[in-house]
Image (cartoon, rainbow, N blue to C red; front, side, top):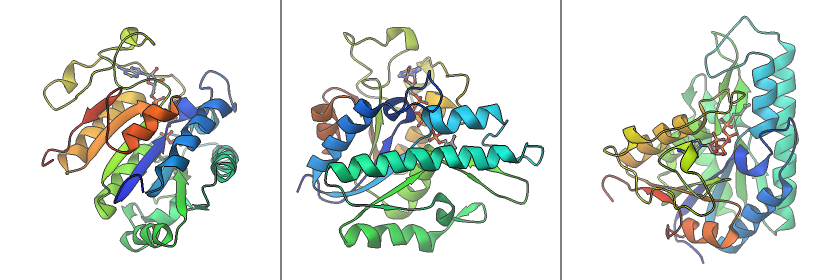
Length: 261
Ligand code: ATP
Ligand code: IP8
């Protein structure tokens, strides 16, 4: 068994899709990450982002994390459809690696705009039965209109309920760098981030990213760590590095250590 206790992994849209090209899968990124997950052998929940599927369509139709009633309603259908297409790709590639999944509809995680404690607990039952729940960022309804619940938001929500051993964000880059210009295959990301050095980190955002890009992810990571769970950022393109990260070894990535850890 690779890791005792539950691990939650977010497969970033930057890893599993080509963010520069609408509705384009990055099959090699997805398969690399899937092979690492298959070798973990421990309890696992997978969440995936939108990348060039969800974000591209959401941005075209003006959907964002803020609920809105002033939307072209067809955008709700098209964004959800794009996410479902991406979800099928993720499920298929995981199955090909021997990971039997249980696709969990994101709306079932919510009770109105609050987390559904009961349904989040179901994820644990699914894991106990030997399956890997897979959920994803999606468009959800609310009394104030439709909004996007990001995969990162889901990670935060279910971490609070399920208290996993660690969270791993699998990205297309090796971790979090001091700024976007510093990203290169030859330079190392920041090894440890905490509340002190986080404000100095420079970020950029893909314009079509409707949920806040890496900056929002960093905020989610800091909150999760403050609430007691280690958060690791690692390359999903390097299966051996991702596998180590899933086991808590962050030699080549970035960690935000749990405050009580
Ligand atoms: P999605 O939200 O679609 O799931 P994701 O979780 O993979 O995507 P992104 O929001 O796309 O994450 O963030 C990853 C991207 O952030 C990388 O591709 C990288 O180019 C960019 N980036 C910008 N600034 C930084 C930084 N300082 N360190 C690391 N990556 C950064
Ligand atoms: O990529 C957003 O999820 P994220 C999903 O995790 C949609 O931010 C529908 C754009």
